[in-house]
Length: 218
Image (cartoon, rainbow, N blue to C red; front, side, top):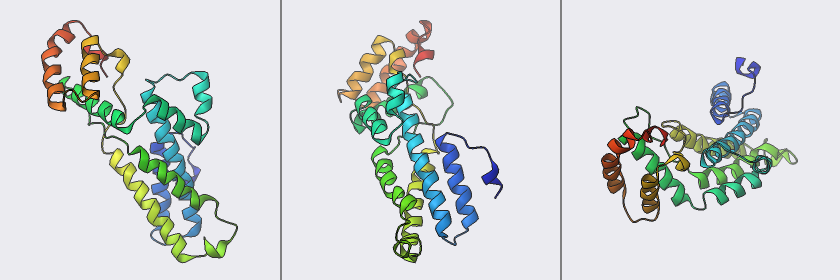
């Protein structure tokens, strides 16, 4: 139980680490107390993951008003929808980032897109295991309810394990030279595919390197 004595941190990695610590302590016993603590930490992990993702979408710049908005779950999701209106746009941004880092020869793991819709739904489901104390015989004293809770935890944890296999971040659109930004917009608008993006960046790379712009792509 040494992990209980560790100072709390704020990254989603840390919250996931705490979830795994609790599950190791539980050791398959599926204790109701562990379920409550794990659900809380996992919900924190979801909130922090989406907040950090939004921070990258905003190119690491928040206004004071945006910071205040992010203090609530609804505000965080509203700002995320305003910043990247569609999941397709986010996926395209991830793909372009991965192609750019490959062309630049950067030895970093590929960015793995976060399943935003899944995490949002999981937040709602996991929350059910944080507050259901009014009628314990229907919840924490109910073996089936507890088993379902641990199953939900496992599904959500699997998504974080998938995310953690790669990098977490996004390329900065504001630092792209105009021709690269045009290429990105064409890719976003489905005018070109990933193969065309890569071939175009390979052609541009020597010129961009000479202009010392390439370093600012990501």
